Length: 481
Ligand SMILES: *Cc1c(COP(=O)(O)O)cnc(C)c1O
Image 1 (tube, protein in one colour):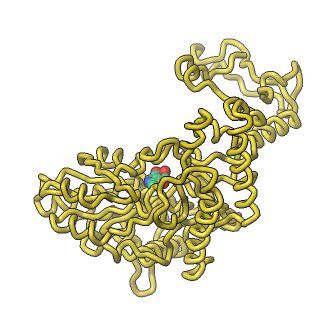
Image 2 (cartoon, rainbow, N blue to C red):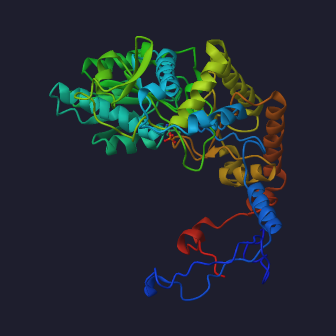
Image 3 (cartoon, protein in one colour):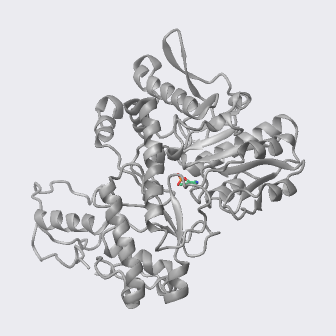
C-alpha cells in the first residue's frame, strides 16, 4: 500500500506561501464558532503532494491503462476530442436561463440529438432530461402510467420482466408505482413466450425487455411478444443499455417497442463509472410524445426554441432544465463524427470482437448459451473450474487483475452460475483481444496446475485480496492520525 499523505508529512514543510493574515476574526465570528486549536493538516511540499496523488491515480484501473471488459457497462475508449470540445467556453459558460436568442447553438445541439436518437431507434419523440439509464427507465415507466391513466385504466399495475433483467429494471418498476412480475428465460436464454403468455392479463401495464439481453443474445421473438402485450393494451419497454450492438441495424421502434431508454454514457461515448455523470434519454412512439417531460427543444422558421406546448399532458419534469447537457453534447459530437455508416461499423465491430473472443475461449470455459451468435458481449461460466478444482469465478476474476486487466462483470446475470460477463467493446484491437485471450487461457491452466495461486490472487495489485465478510462486520473507513 502507498503511504497516506499523513504518513509522509514532516513538521514545518510547506507547499505554499501566503501573505500574512491581516483579518481579525475575533469581532465578527461568535466565540463558539471559532476554532479552539490549530487544525491538524499534513505538512507537505508541493512535490510530495504531486507524487502522492499521481501514485494514487495509478493504483486504480482505467481504460487508458488497460483493457476493461466489464460486461453490460460498455467500458470503451472515448475520443479525447469530445472532452476538448465540451470544455470550450462557448458551451460551458452558458446559463440555462439565458434567452433563446443567445443560445441557438446549444438548442440546435439538443434538437439535433433528439432527432438523431429518434431516427436511430425508430421513435417519434425523444426527451433528453433523464440523467442515467435507471432514470430513463423510471421516466419511461411514468410515461406508461400517464398513458394508462389517460385511458382510465387504474387496474393496470403489473409490469412483466424476464429473470435475466438488470437489477435497475425491477427497482424502477417499484419506484414508478407498479408491481413486478418476473418470468423465466427458456433454455436458449431468451424470453419463454409461453410463460409470458400465462402471466399476461387485463392488469398488465407493460413488458420490459433488454435487447440484446444481458446474456448478450438478441431476443428474436420481439414481434410475437409485442402482439401478446399489445392485445391487452400493455406497452413494450426496451432497456437500450446494450444499443451498441445494433446501431443502424435494428430500430426498436419498428419491431414492436413503444418506449426505450438510451444509455448515452455507454453507447455514445461518455467516460463513465463512479456513479456518473450520465444521460438516459427516452424515445417513445407518436401517441406517447405528449406525456414526455416538458420542455422539448423544437424548431420553427429556422429558429430553435424551448417548447412547453404539451405541458398540460406532460408527466412533469424529472430533472432541472434540459438534463445533463455536457453528456448530451458528447453524444451529439460522437454521432455527427461517425455518421450513419460509422455507427453501423461500431456495432459490427462490437459484435465481431465478442464472437471472436467467445470462440477462442469456449474450449477453456463453459459457455452455457451458444445456440446463436452472441452480440456485443457473452456470458462464460467458471462452473468447470469450480467442479474440477474448487476454484470460484471470484478467484478467476481476482487473478485477471494480476494480469493487468479489469475483471469482467461476475455473478451477473443471476441465471448463470459462476457467471463472467465479458464485453470487449468495439474500440479494442485484435492484439489486445489476443493478449486477453492468452491471459484467460493461462488462468485456466493455472486452475489445474497451481490452484493456490488463484485462491490467493491478486498478488500484484496495490490492494490484495480483501476479506469481504470481515469488512462488512467491522466496517472501518476512517484513517486515524
Ligand atoms: C447499465 C445498465 C442499466 C442502468 O443504467 P445506469 O445508467 O447505470 O443507471 C440498465 N440496464 C442495463 C442492461 C444496463 O447495462
